[in-house]
Length: 120
Image (cartoon, rainbow, N blue to C red):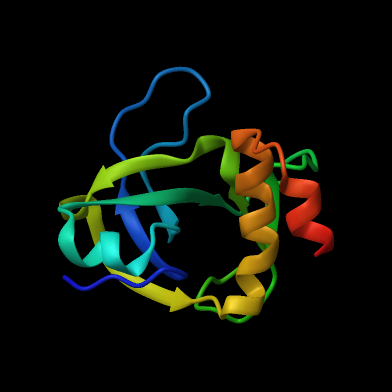
């Protein structure tokens, strides 16, 4: 299965503990395309359509990318999954639509220079 960064799939994230996102839900592929080509795993952000308190680690997905509702990517829930957890293709975010996602990931990971990256 060839995955591309920015694609959205439904995935079975399985059973979880506490506030982890689980079950069958959309996920956004955020791993780079080289990693997606060679690795049996990929890095994803869970997506929810439930209202979430706005946080710097949340990124709205408002485009017509195959999702049925306004949704939010949860960068604080970033995780690596085996590709066999992916069920079906939903849609794609264009590179410019990934910019808020990238900012949320940098914030979630505490990257020191994220303000410099954001302002250019």
